[in-house]
Length: 441
Image (cartoon, rainbow, N blue to C red; front, side, top):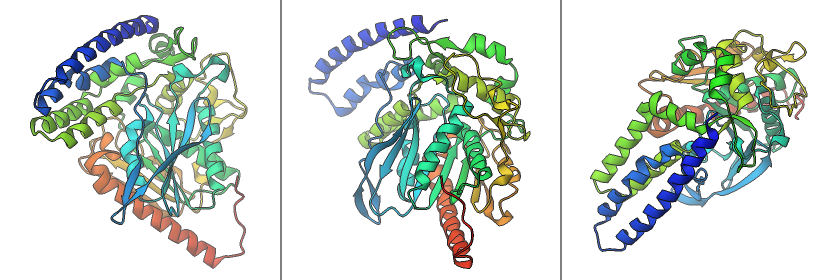
């Protein structure tokens, strides 16, 4: 389709940018007020990110956090690699628990959740699913749809369960669907459950009050989506020939479908600039870059999400089956893979002895009201007092995991859930110290 032409235009713009940056460097060498230099970079800060000119997302760069009034070093490493996703570990001193943050594979680079990771480090070590740009994944790595996502996440959770510390799973946006499915399948295999599961702003039952994305998914056939929204990675990338949902379409989505988030970030930038606050300006600039850092999505996963999550809502319908051994290097659509008759039926009611928290924002235009709370009914095997819901008044989608509402409302609720879940686990162990225990992966 258009990928090769768009990439050629980006190359021209990168060359123009390099020349303009050279001229700006000469200008900035002249004596001038700091804000004059800041104004000279306004174009690069506000508009270049939408053009996708960066070579890749910025680093997380979380070197230290403050704990009990003291600065503590944070060590970052990758503890597991798959072709499409790395399991990135942020370790802090004396962490008594582990938190697995399942970042959505929805076009944004995982670094968009840097603030989320930084806040969760106050609670323990943080592991995050750090997605690889599909354009950089060779065809030989095979396909990546919902089946493969579940298998990958199952492996990550199995690895973390061996750590011995309490494990808490936090899934955001579209990752809630495969995360809940993975944990349900593990429970069906009598594997140990994590201490808690938190599901934030996710389309677990997309039939309820569909948002902008849900309405768009329902208004087009899967065939239309495949013909008009899928492109092929051109030469020059490791994933040459791979079918993807490309970033150039996602950039249009940011500007047209969800303009309010981008506008709010621009407003934050303008406020910091007009007040001469260099520190706030740097923070606003970084937030813009993180939000607009996008990655190509594998075509199979994108089409699976449209079909299984939004159009047929198979998890809510109790008809989602996840097949074993789904490797397929043909690059063909996997739209029907989730309903394979030979697969295992996903049964969230199999979950036991785990705390469950569902979180929604009352102004979430991406995930409709009730879509995430639907998990509370699906997971009927969990004790009623271990199933909790949080509605954040006046909060939009992104505010559920970044910004003031995340810090003031959502994160404290997670901390309370972590503590309650661990206390319940200790109580169960004290009441039945020699009782049967679930097998760990």
